[in-house]
Length: 511
Image (tube, rainbow, N blue to C red; front, side, top):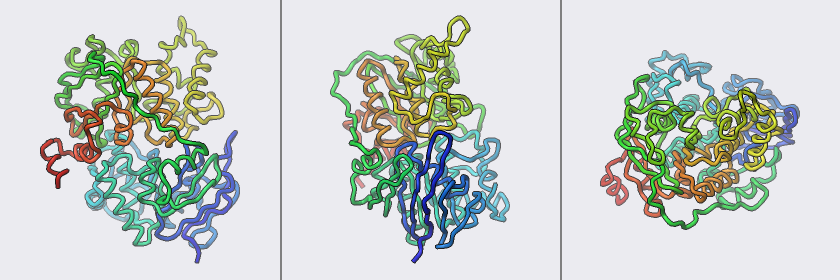
């Protein structure tokens, strides 16, 4: 009996890099198959070959036992292959329904397609307004659009790249149920995720890539998250742990009654009386489902949007609510935005130039209007070495890196500057287990050295691992802060889902 999809000795090379080396992979009808590997292991290249974005240099593909040439995504979709991308293929100027209509011959009017989108949204718990313009969506909301677009195609093979990064634990559990139902109905799923507990709970089989080669195949349910990570890394995994520390009462960064009204878009989230204090050496976590005000909060904290009252935000007791982003950086307040390309890094310039974007003044890379090339390159090379960024050299453009490796460079660029206060949104999004552990270790070390860290994340595992206190943002409001040792994933997950009334949360947990 032939497999639904078979890859035979697939090889793909790029200048200075062999992305896939004689890869063999088979996926059966109805199978949920995990593709695992560190950032830069060749996963993205392989799935792009399956989806017709890239053609292999050597080897071939068989679909239902027949040799086939998938020369474009159109060919892939005709075969019944759909893909949810980690980096989104959406047009900012169009609405959700207009984006979904592109390239997919539903033969429906936009109004009927919008109704289908609403039906899928309700079924999967992926709330989205079909008529909302994409430029006004957060990164998490854009991923929901990609997921919905694929599900509308009723695929025979569904490729999913980090699909639960935008979901609460409860919603992720619901999605798993639906994926298992699709599997029973005969839809195969190729599932890529760095959340190894998901892989163990969901997948029937796992193929592990390392440096472009298949190094192992296993039944993930019979492995632990640690053994899966160690197969990917080829070495032992060291998980960082918070050290017991004396709590400081000294407030380093404070926000008092921060409110905002979204003027540019009717779909924006209004922030309502947000207040919190961050102490010296503390790691403070804000959990929340995408689109609940994280983007608006980050803009106000970073200085992209000013506060009406400068006293609303204070750093070391000094009001900074009316200072620009650059002025806040000069006072030691540093940022890691959610969006990698376009916000944190420029795609079409080399890594060393991307290092300049935030470090030009703090690292004195510019003197009297003249750029110090040698020092700038050394700064970028130091980040690449310290954070194990897999790249041929710092002269390569940011667009040539995998998402996880670019994220490591961006995080490293900010940490390397030793900020007084670091605000990071999704610091390990799309990063493999080993790299995430390394980033967490650096954040913990930063806090232990006296810096204050604010992490805004949807990854509860991350927050429970390194944060001292945690709160939840939902519909522009935040819940009371809870010591992590006193919190539970279920409680935080319910708050993320919109249950801001703590009595309601307690009642749901009891039930």
